[in-house]
Image (cartoon, rainbow, N blue to C red; front, side, top):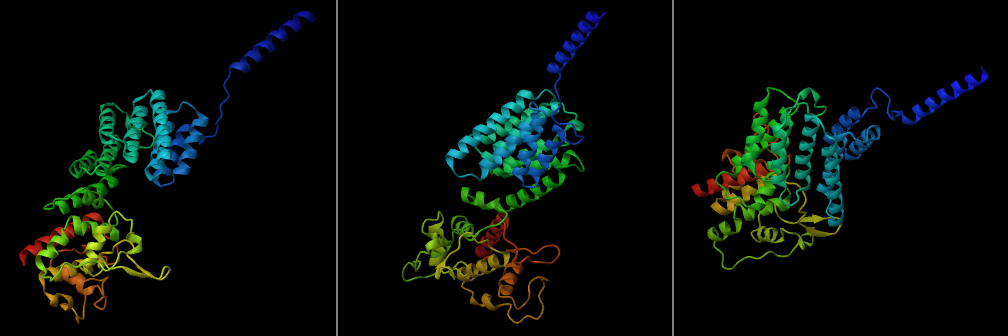
Length: 400
């Protein structure tokens, strides 16, 4: 009896031991400690511009399930954002390789349409961020693949709708400076649904690109102009490049202002010695364009151009007014609106140093106010606004 009991217990112990060896213990057991939750939180962190937090979330998702494909897609996007801001060639090369490895794993472990969809959108986003050779064609390939999938949108944890792929392709076209395709692609998102997660973003993208397209109408915009056109804030160096490369200020000035000898810039500001737009700035200094002169810098006790400072709308009005005066020879423009009691703009006082310039620009439709009536005098000028103002100025110059 004792022997039988011993053998029975030994057999049971053996089964339990074998069972312990084969049972996989879950690493993450909390209600919100799941790969899906951490992936969603990581994507939201990316949306908020917090790549470090996003990486932590994606790493946690992989700790819970090392074969979860969406987390690898997320890590690829994080890597792409790192490459985007990195100037060191060696670091970029290493990070690009890591992005490729993450994407490969995302594709390897994907086995459902929604997971493949996330993978293809990640491919579009990483190509757009890193911009390797042939990147736009690669993004288009990923977009076409995403559109062939039959996805149940209820399974899309973060993107929620398949129009997300179209939105990010619109961003890719915008980054690739193909403004017509960008506008059409954003419009496709707007037409896909009355409202959706990507509707508001696509609407902003469409309005931005539409403004760029309208601004470039009538201008032969080169690569410099296209790159500046997409900027949300134009710097003093950017504006100098636009005035010289797109408005052809040097040619216009030389052809309309009688000079006994060709003028020269009095000096080269120290902060422009090795700047890519050095010659453009020196040309504006040569013609003494008001608002584009070097500024006194207390720290260095020198006159610097400060190429990285953003140009406000009031400053742009002041600069364009001076160009208009120089090209037309009408000195009365400089004081045309002095002494007015009331301003038509709630944010521009008649005593403002830029009031006369704002009035000269708006009454000639060179610059526009908002529907609210505000001029936004202190807001930074975006690239499309700068190009549009130059196009209108060229039209006014041709009238005189």
